[in-house]
Amino acid sequence: MDDLAKLPSIDPSVVMETLQQRHTKDEIYTKNGAVLVAINPYKPINIYTDAHLKQYKSSMALEQEPPHIFAVAAATHRSLISEGTNQAMVISGESGAGKTESARFVLQYLRFVSNASEDLELRIHTSQPLTEAFGCAKTMRNDNRCARE
Image (cartoon, rainbow, N blue to C red; front, side, top):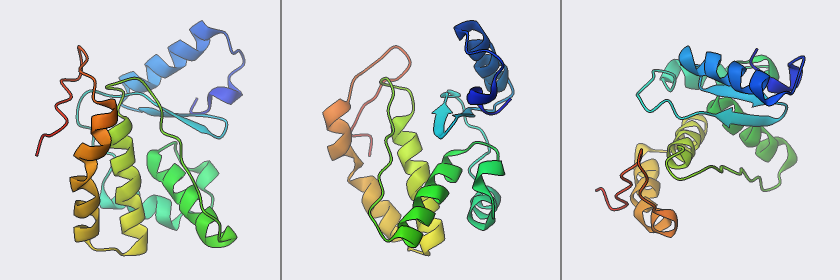
């Protein structure tokens, strides 16, 4: 089940079991209605390729695609274009949860669909130490040395 809102029960044990089963299969993204739940895999997984970018860019029905950060970015981008109004995404979670990585994937998608140069993406990424400094906590799972580069 890729949408928690469609589970037969919202009992915490059912929700956690569903998330655990998906995480075990490296399905780190799960929908909860309009919200995307992401669980940090703490390992590289191959779900951010050009093929994935093309899949979400060309989809005629994003709601029918598997849950993915690119689907959220695609929906936001489409709303920006069709409505002509500013859009916002909220990426939240505990320190070490993968918020920065999620933001990178959103930028990767937006650069892909806008045909922007890799230089623009690089310039955005190099400003990251400044933004990370505001929430740069070290945890047991995340050394989080903000100025890595």
